[in-house]
Image (tube, rainbow, N blue to C red):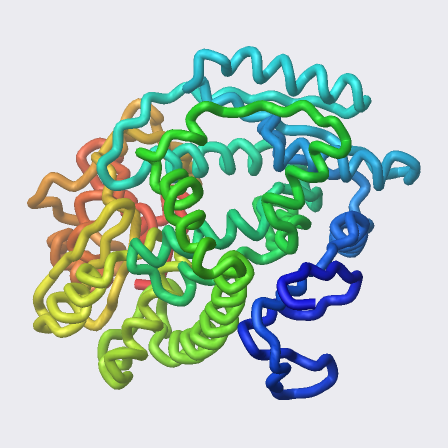
Amino acid sequence: MVGNDFKCNVPIFVISERSHYYPGKTQWKRAGMTGLRITVKKDKTDFLEVVRKNILDLLSSYKKIFVAYSGGADSHVLLHLLQGIFRDKNGVKLAVIHVNHNLSPKAKKWVEHCRKVCKKLCIEYITKSIAVEIKSSDHSPEEILRKLRYEIFAEVLPKDACLVTAHHADDQAETLLLQLFRGAGPKGLAASPRKIKFARGWLVRPLLDCSRKEILLYAGRNKLEWIEDESNANTKFDRNLIRHQLLPSIKKRWPAVVATLNRVSRHCSEMSELLAMLAEKDLQYVISKSDANVINVDLLKKLSLIQQKNVLRFWLHKLCLPMPSEVKLREIVRTVINSRYDAVPVVKWFGAEVRRFRDGLYAMPPLAPLNNKKIKISCQFKLDPKKIKVCFRQGGEKIKMSGRQGTRDLKKLMQEWGVPPWMRDRIPLVYYGKKIIAVIGYYNDGSVAVPLRRSI
């Protein structure tokens, strides 16, 4: 039997030279033969059974399912599967969301192709368009387009509805390698969850157990017609380079690399979850008693350096801010957390900044330029609207406060109120004539109703 190929319907194993694995045993044993190769014949129904089970388990509770549909092979197969499974189920409706990126000269043809597919399948069709010029040195075009695409999905998705995407095992392997090359930690390397809260509803990925090869085989067997985006072959994009050059080379040596990388992603998910649990506990310890979004620096310093970095990442994520690089994170620890009490340091990166005031650590999006904004106030007494003016601090302002002798310098009052320096010129002041009658959020003399952050 040497040199022959056997096919069977039960999983055996690939056998190395002069070795054999006996099912049910826990060790390899010498078989006294060379060149023997056993392959497994995979039943084509395996794919359908796995996917059908995943879809029913994840989606049966929804009355309306929105499908992110590009018109490519992956999303077309997903749409075809969903239509076949839910076609005869009363009360379940499918809708397609197609996003036109306007980057290809064929974009309009793709919009029409997707429309025709949906018409043929009797499925509701929604198309949205992105019309922006991408210019950013901080983010890749793929990342920017993905963000814009998901903003559209979030806008369209109704409350408690479900968005379904066609991400599969190969996508997950590519993402892990991309993140690995960017130096990501466990959270960045973690596997994409099958189901996650998204916007006002849920995001579901039912094809994560399937390979690209299985999806293409299904598409071929069912004679599906799909779009081939020419940009997917362009290896100047990182993901395409990994897909078309790196992974095929690795597979020659390690054929099961996609499954292995998916396993690594699952391990990283578990590690990330454990780190988040620890960070949440530490955050409760270091959070300011007066402001749930501010960290007490003195308490933070009592944690180890590793715990500090872990809780900072968790805190920034909770505030929906982009993650800093490792270099920026070390800079936050060195120049902000360990600065003098009276210093006002700041560390900035794309989309966020961290500042310190006294014993408080603050994180926020970059401070925008001061623009004219409408502020609604309600008068408690009869005031002449023509005498009311709202403006920002210029310096040198004084307030005559009720129940106190003389006037007080506004700058010193803001120090007493604990207003961070970067906010002092951004708090609206309400004048009646030449008199300050309200400092929005901190003071009013009773003639106007404005909310106060704290008692004075």
